[in-house]
Image 1 (cartoon, rainbow, N blue to C red):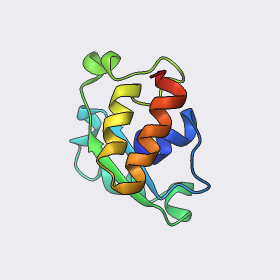
Image 2 (image 1 turned 180 degrees about the horizontal axis):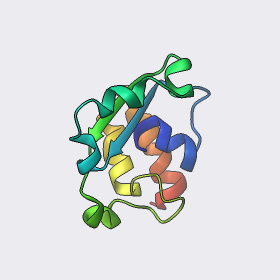
Image 3 (image 1 turned 90 degrees about the vertical axis):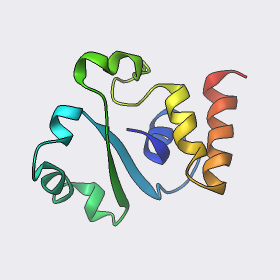
Length: 104
């Protein structure tokens, strides 16, 4: 997970999660029809949030993305960068992450 959803898990900042973003293993992301099947089920779609899947790294490369906190959220620097690119509120959220979890 990344973006607002990742922030919600690591350093809650907002009362709602405007978007759901996740990196998906490269091998899975490239399978035909799989992205559609992922968006057809689960509370993410039922809640009406916008869902975005990004092509992630292959499993053998993922250790550089992990935080070690819960195993499903990208690293703190990756989360910070992803929040920065998500607009004005994203910059505020990135600043919150930096102050509360990154320690500077």
